Length: 511
Image 1 (cartoon, helix red, strand yellow):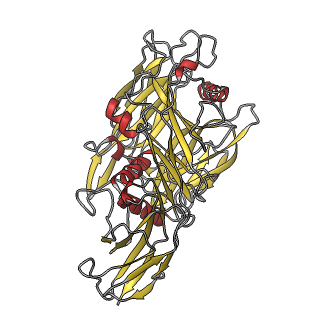
Image 2 (cartoon, rainbow, N blue to C red):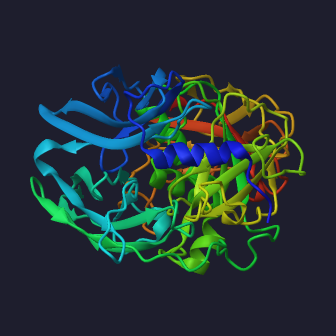
Image 3 (tube, rainbow, N blue to C red):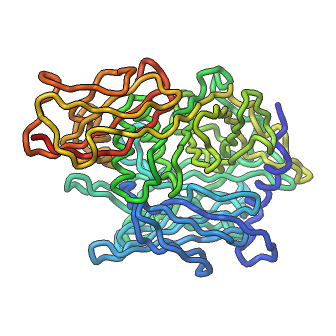
């Protein structure tokens, strides 16, 4: 197997060391993410605080960013007043000096409806496993597949006595007037240290919480029997992972716009719907300033093979990116390390992403056997990388006619746009209502695809830059307001594209 670069080793050692925010290191990093409610709705104006040392407010699209943070481990809090009631949430984070710490989602809920999960992590001899990670992942609705679960995922690190606390977890969610309790998968994971170079096997338990109460969940981890990562059959085949790119016309700063564009993306194809569902599960939203978003997904091969219970020695994934297919497992190509065994997709929203440039991605699995008996990084702890997948982002797409808020004929409306380099087909979607994305996938819209409000009408895939609608395709009602958007695809068969560009969402009134 190929060796991960020393930088990853240092990254992992920092993660395991549990160094506090008040340490002596003078290295600093950047922390960013989103603030959401239990249903995944982005929360603007929330106050985000890191150990009472750093503070900011979330923007209109729910994102926040704090720069110049001293490297270390912190507790981050978010709070907001919603309908006159205090909402609150926390999570543990690690800030690194060698790059930004991104996608740190904070879920908040009503103060009196939050509960805690706490307990201990020990080995079979009842010795405390200081530094063990415990991750709570919401599984709601319980009859949904893993990619359509809630966005809640919180982590805690066990202290020197092996004790951990995952606090302020929402106990329930109300959907269509019905309150349902949330079931949490709680996973304990611990990497090898001196004397235990093989690390420990993960343990999975389930739990619920109640507002104002503490639920106890204790773990007794067995020593791992295998250093080598277990991966699905076909992990290195060409179809093990895939990438989908979206380009939007401008920086999206409002929550409504963000939801609308997610709803539009879900209309594109079943693959696109899966990408958006997975992104919402992970709680990631494109940060303010992002125009291009490349999503890498290995859900199908991983979930179909392992189900919701990943290999017991699995610790997370490493993400690689390059501009050639000759990716190597070193710090030149590595862009992120996901210390979470439940992650099955990744959203790359780097500001270096450029339209027309082909990006190649690869993913590897990493075990809990990070270190050898001498506390050096164990090169056998990482699997072979997947076969690289590629995507070439499209440029911005400009809708021309009808202009926003225009009045148009209801008999045979014509829609036009400017061509986009690299696009091979286009589709126009028309909405009777402003498109929305119901974060908890409740039955609003098409019952067969309840995760979004589908478009009211859409064109066939076309290669030109205009399309005219007429009966019986659509029948516009005079005086009614509609919304329209055009989407470009990099494939002549629109649905089979993996790079899309979405125009601005315009409204018009039929006359």
